[in-house]
Image 1 (cartoon, helix red, strand yellow):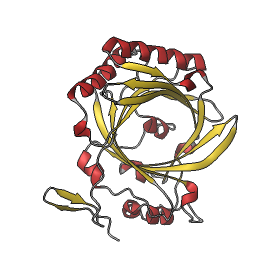
Image 2 (cartoon, rainbow, N blue to C red; image 1 turned 60 degrees about the vertical axis):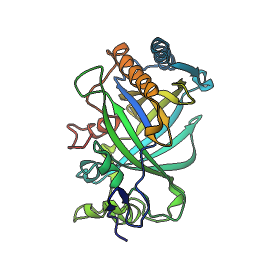
Image 3 (cartoon, rainbow, N blue to C red; image 1 turned 120 degrees about the vertical axis):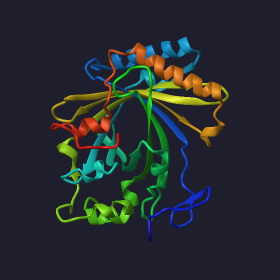
Length: 300
């Protein structure tokens, strides 16, 4: 089946007539230097800065009960061809596994995303997997600081699908032949020498994540927030930290102007409050792709 979209007047659909997915999430991220994240206390101390800044700009803060518990531990690996064909074409493929008390729990999760600064291009890419099992689609607007200046933001559009690994029954789950059946947009990347995908830069990431709470923007609109640090498994090399908050909505047009202003004010004010922590011009994914030197060209 063709994966090309069909556009007629104001209506835009995928090849099977399903309307384009629309943005239903806003995820605002601050990419942070990892050096000061050396303990659970340091994660909680960052949370205190977030809470103080929220109060300063008039945003409510409801603490998560898990903030006083142990952080969540997850293992993350990125998969790509030897020449990074996915990343250079704005695709990201990763697997995530949760750990409790040192042991993996639940089903490994596969996330496939197309991330691009153009909303229409991101929407037009049909990320639905061709599997018999269940999957979930998320279309996000991701806010990041400007690449070389504090106090502003830029937007990337992330069109994602995610599913438990058990939902696909292919025996060979990491060959290009399998991937382009599951994810038809990858068909165009096939060529000799690209038969397999493997771990990007042989990197296995350990994520230590602490839920902080919810930011109350009024009128029932709240954003869960958390802080995390990424480091390599084995060497325990600190890679990058991240603070993020995420809003979910039915239609972005329905968000009141005051709520939009509060979210933007919180985001830009927090940048100034933690200016010494910020790692500008980078994403978590790019950090993994840079483990062995310069990262390939991307759309990030």
